[in-house]
Amino acid sequence: MVGSGEWRGVARHGIAAPRRWRWLAAIAWALIIVGIVRPPAATATAGPAGMRLKAAAAVGVGLAADPPVPGPWAVGYRTVRIGDPRRPGRELVTSLWYPAVGSGQQAGGAAGGACPEVAGGDRGRAGQPAFYPLIGEAGFDSNVAVTDAPPAPGPFPLVVFSHGSAGSRVQAAYLMEALANDGYVVAAPDHPGDTMLDVAAGHTKEQLAMAADRSRDISAVIDALTDATCSSAPLIRPDQIAVVGYSYGGLTAILSSIGLSPAPADPRVRVSVGIAATTAPLPRAMLAQIPVPTLLLGGGRDPIVTLGDNADRAFTDLTASHPRLVVAVADATHNTFTEICRQAGLPGTASVPAGLRLWIALTAATTCHPPLLPPAQAQLVADRAVVSFLDWQLRADTASGLYLAGAGPAIGPGVTVRLQP
Image: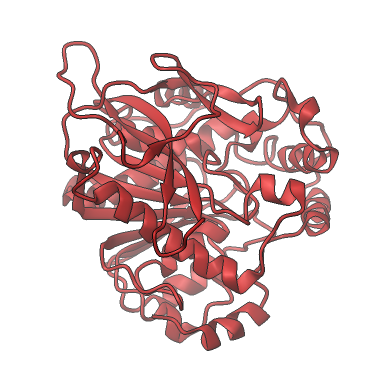
């Protein structure tokens, strides 16, 4: 387990939740680097796997060597509240995506049930498209996930997703849908004190406490969903658990298998995936402790979490992680692998605080237009890389491993893969 003293040394190197003005400065700097000044498009990009395939094919992505996309399952969705008995009052509003039955398939048990508690407040109703909130009524409906759809018979591997600093549990909903479509149960908690809502309200936490709380949040979600008294337990294979994270959440994912004082290591985590993961401040000795297979996905045009200082350096220092991969996307930037291009210009955003609205608009302007990778292509790259890696490591699907090892250009334009078995 990483001690708090060592983490304080890490903190001095600059891992912190970005504050409101730091965000704007970073985005302004990205505007200069990328040279994009056009406003974000107001229309939503394609969401479900099938629509992304069509969009990608229209702009020339080779599909012949793809792993199966879309997968065999329909996608169910619900929002639940998960409490941590070790931290009274800590409530994790968590989105669940899960394999659901389609026509002619037989339903399994309940998804969620009495444990954990079903959360209110989301607009989606049973049988209706899932609603992914930005703030309040501002959000978008899924084109693939259905609220409270009957779950398919389990068990399935579990993926816990950790959002970026000042992000949200639906920050990468497209990827969560692709995983559920492929046969994974996905749980994405909001990390209290480090969400978009917290920043908009000025309620953020101190960095060290926030980092440790995030690690404990991951374990609390795993505890709740695998507890024998919960109706979700039959849906999940407790021996096949991965943590996937974006940006600061990528750091959370990478550290989940070794712990961060006072959060102990979680031995149930078998695989970690960091997307644009902030690993640069981690000491070499800390990275060398990571004992699980690791995938790092990043963008060559990311001015915030640069490939060289983060994914490339971590690839060298993750000496106990076998296999480990870096999937580098030449024309991707920091927010390429999020839903920012769909969130910009949403109906109802007039109710969003002005500072946050400006941040969304600027982030989309530096993410969603040429010369950067189009959103449909970027989402397809993430789907291919993450689903294939988890299939390889959790399901022992050697074909997926071979696909990743030799298919950089097939994964997407400008993609390169570095692999250490």
